[in-house]
Image (cartoon, rainbow, N blue to C red):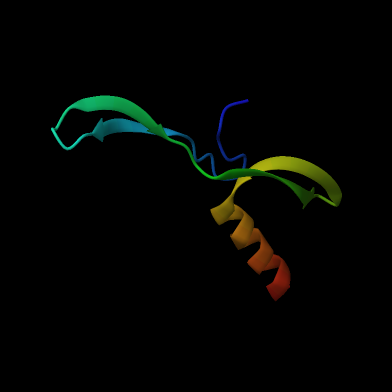
Length: 64
């Protein structure tokens, strides 16, 4: 299982870690993905969701 959001598709990004002496090595930035119980079409399902989508879903549920 890769680290990506099943709602928005947000995944890992890569880039350089730059030291004080300006040496560069490759590194990855992974999204904050949590395994959450979500109700989809009336049935509960466990999904890997980034925290931004999770907060949005919680706000939509409160406003309805």
